[in-house]
Length: 159
Image 1: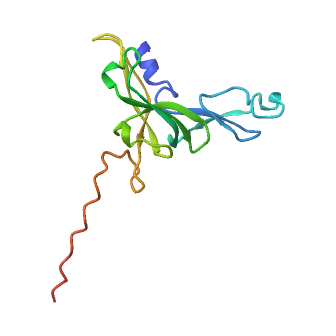
Image 2: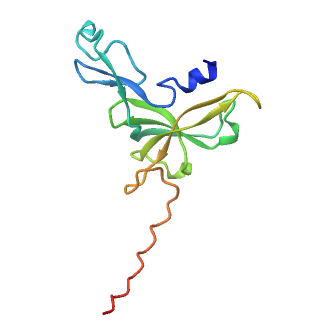
Image 3: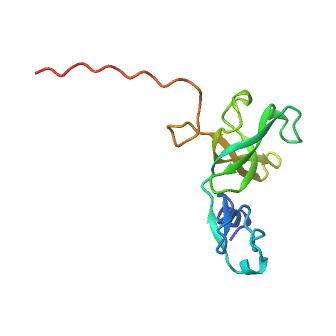
């Protein structure tokens, strides 16, 4: 198997795979082999189970980045946020598909996998999670703040 294929097929590579303690039910991301929440850590040894996070959450705090780190200069300004997932763990990630001025604490978001960087023109492309806003009525990421179109009135049925 080629190295590239190995990484594409890695179970945790393109999802939010964490772990859950079978003793106290606390969820962790990234996965842990011992639960630091249990009173006696040794009780959790061998009892940490794989757990798939949904990727849904809300912005707890955020910062708008204007002076980007190397490799992100073309994206400024961008939003870097701490997101509390519905399962509990807090993740740090970029908020995309929304203007920086529209991001606020409490914004509902969903993890989405995007290109992070590329090594040279013909190099390896690195992907990772970012967060996109969700509408109240839609499952997928929000694309704009345009209002919903007004319903088209129906003509009465004719006999």
